[in-house]
Length: 98
Image (cartoon, rainbow, N blue to C red):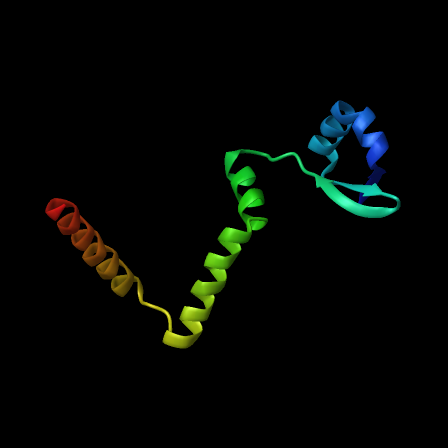
């Protein structure tokens, strides 16, 4: 694992970006403690995964989903798509009445 102090990263950011592209993530420290990680995403999908992994809002959605599955059990694929279809039809009817 590569580690560099914040002051050094600030002064040589372009070089660290290039190095992170080829050598992987860099842990950034301030006063010897980790304060950040420099990661160069490989593509848009990678960037999306990185951002969502650190999103409190998305993590809350996942936690609610996990809790629901624990309490109610998981849906089969057929049940899932039946509910999606039913809910879409409900929304369409609601839009028509507005």
